[in-house]
Length: 252
Length: 128
Image 1 (cartoon, rainbow over the protein chains, first blue to last red):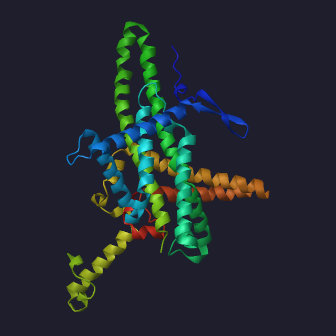
Image 2 (cartoon, rainbow over the protein chains, first blue to last red):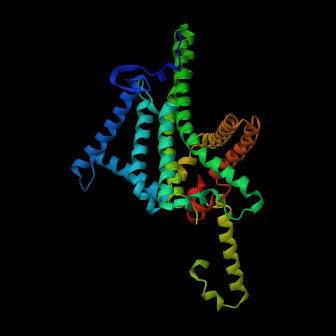
Image 3 (tube, one colour):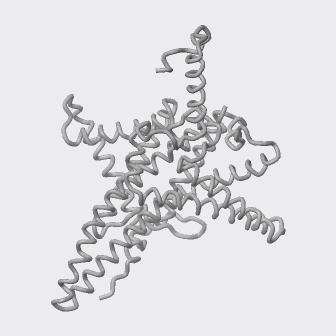
């Protein structure tokens, strides 16, 4: 039996949206869009459900919501300062969206939204343009000081400035590719090892014994993927905070 | 313990020890600014522990930083070639600059080099 590890990332058209089209291409409601709606629905349900009772001694749901709030708030304060807290809703939304997308993607037969480069690139570009827009709006041309490091000899300053600008422009690339590639690679690895189980299992009695090895691997990999799912959401959020910090304090 | 004394006070203490400890303190502060990586990890915000917990994630982070720099440099060079018709000089120059930017990215996210001027205000963020 052949197992195609890439098949899980295919996007299927589900419902046509006849009134909408971009550049002559009709838009479809895809499985990716469906899972995005599911993610937003679950996050909203968690937070609205958790904050409805507002007990002094929190229940399970409420403490989960409070923990995620505290966690993101501490992250924002630590890397962007108290001024960064005005971006807390944005960072929290990003974090919860990416976290739930990663976690839901681990459920078999579900679709991992963050394994699509276009999704992570959109999120990273959103962060990038907010940083640039807010940076210029708040600091004016002073924002360009970001590209002029202090204490550099005049002779090599032009080259350093170009390198700094390139480094700044490469941020959305690494920001988006990191999340996308982690999810893609993890899911392909899982699928390949799960494929080994099926292939060995169908190869007779000896194969069934042999299949226990990839089975153990899959169990361990699933645990690793759970860690990676959380870690990547966290890394995405903290990098967002670091980039926002540049917009808030672009050098002095 | 040297933090307890403020700058005005150590002018009165003319002994050698006071002068020496003041110099040591200045040196320490200078080193702390120059080499953020030298900070003890406990200075971090919990963020650090979570990220360094997985060497896999760290390696991935650094490699993607390098690749991003190179890719952006090559892309800009290629676009300049097309627009200005200076092929292949744009690609050559910007690929090299892209490599430099990638290495800068890696060293910055590894905390080996101080970032831009903004980092001096907030030392913690350099750790990644």
